[in-house]
Image 1 (spheres, rainbow, N blue to C red):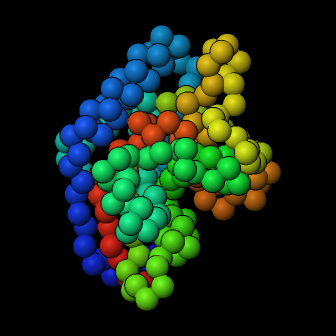
Image 2 (image 1 turned 135 degrees about the vertical axis):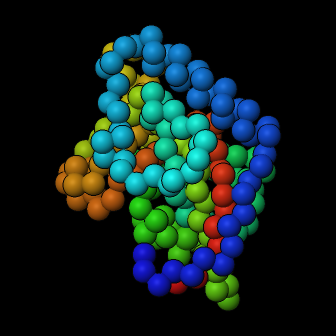
Length: 196
């Protein structure tokens, strides 16, 4: 994303959402710790991460800062109530989850789609996302309401879906996409207004 002018960055401080996110992350950490080393670590493919001191990121839960493109009205709702898969579209490539990207240009595609007519500003959230044990897919999962079942943990699905660049969509995936179906696996930390 070249020629981007950042208009403002607003930090979200929602104690209730933060506590729910931390509780979910701790639950994931305990479960994954009990599973041993069978989880795929996404740190090898998720290369960019901001230089934030004392960010307290948890590599053992596949926690990352990721972008989410949206509208200002939706960003305000998300900052107050969190992510809600109940309002997500079933027609998404990977189901009715909340979609995130490591590349701002990918999330910008969603910002463009959701920008109100007459507005000059685009909106993007910078979020903490705990992917847990991801289902690494090469297929689409339209109409899915949760990740596929995990054969290693009968009765429990994977924690998220990860579509890797060049592997997802049978090799046509242009950017990494990270999808969670549990709103407590993502915490919106910053609202970024920008112009292109």
